[in-house]
Image (tube, rainbow, N blue to C red; front, side, top):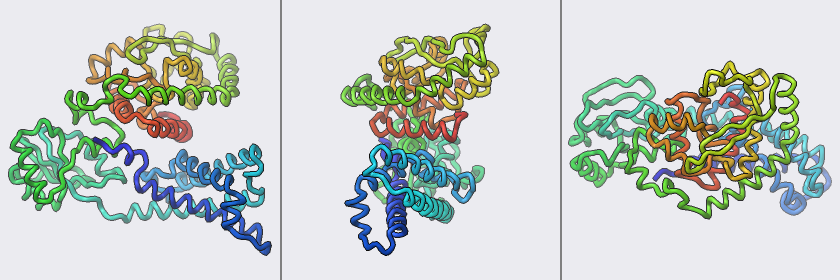
Length: 469
C-alpha cells in the first residue's frame, strides 16, 4: 500500500521544518540579545522559563504559516522574486497573529521592539535558507535509475510524475513491455525507442540501462512466467517495487489507469463505514470548525449580501439539489454568483470563465465566499468540511455511466472543500472528472485526521495563491 505519511510530511519537509524551528529560536535569541545588552541575562531562562508560552506559540504559528504560504513546496524556485516574497509574507502574517495573541494573553507576549527585530532577523534567515534550498535541489544527485515493467501502455503522466517530482526516488530510463515493443529513453526528453531485451532477459536490460530498480505495473495482469522471472531477479539483488504505490505516494491520486476491480475489492476503505470511530471524530471536528467559521466569517456574509443586492436583482442565496452520501439527495445553499436566467436553456456545468457569472459573483467564487452558506449543510450533517465536492443528480447519472468507479465517491459525505479541489485546477468536463475522481478516491482510501487537516490547510493555500482553481 502507498505511504500516505511520506506524501503529507516527507523527510525533506520534516528536515526543513526543523531548520525553520531552529531559525525561529535563533531569531528570538538574537532579538533578546539586542534588546537586553548589558542587563545580564540567560537566553535559556528567557526562552524556556520567562517566554515558555510565547516561544511555543511562536514556533507553532510560524511553522503553520510557512506551510500555508507553501514554503515547504519543493517545486518552487525561491530564487525567483515572487516566490521569495512568500517568505516575507509568511513572516509578516505570523507576526500579525503573534501580535494579536499577545493582546489576548499578555503574559505570553513579546515586547514591541523585540517583535520588530525578530521579524527582520527571521525574514533574512528564512529567505537565505530557501534560496540555499533551491540551489541544493538544483545540484542534488540524480535519483536512482529504474525500469518500468508493464503488460499495458503506461500513461504519460505517470512517467512525468516520476521524472519531475522533486520527491521522486526514481528516474525512469526505460519501459519493458510484456508482449509489446520496449524502449529505453531519457525521461527529461522525448522517448527514443531502442532495442530492449524481452522480460526473459530482463537482467541484460537492467545492465544496459544502468538500473537496479524495477517498477512493476498491473502485477496481477502479468503472466505467471513474468512473475517468476521478477522473483528470480529480486533474489539476485534487484529491487522490485509496485508502480501504483510509488505513483500514489508522489501524486496523491489513485492511478485509475493502473488499477482494476480487484484493487478496490482489497482496500477496506471502499466498504462503507468501516471505521465508525474515525467518522464520529471527524464529525465532531466538522461541527466545531463550522461553528468557529460561522463566528469568524459574519463580516464576509454581510459583504456578500450587500454586494449581491447592489449588483444584481433577486435573492442573495440560492438552493439546489445535490447528491450526498449513499447517493441520497439533499439541498445545498450558496451565495448567488450567476444571473437569474443562468439555466434558462437547461442544466449545464459551470466553467472557469463562465459568462453567466456576474462581476461580483466572480469575486465571490475566486475568494470562495459563495461557499460559506454550506456551513449550514455541514452543521446539519449533509456535508463534511472535507470530501468529494457534491454534484447534481443529472450530472451524476451521466458521469456514473462514463467514468468507471465514479459511484465509489459516495462512500463518504461530500465536502465543503476536497482533496481534488486543492490539488487540481477548476474542471468542467468528463476528462477533468476522471482526474478529480482519482484524487477523491485517494482521500477516501487514506482518510484520517492528518489528511483532513492537511486538506484544510491546502484550502487556505488555494484561496491565497490559486484563486482560479
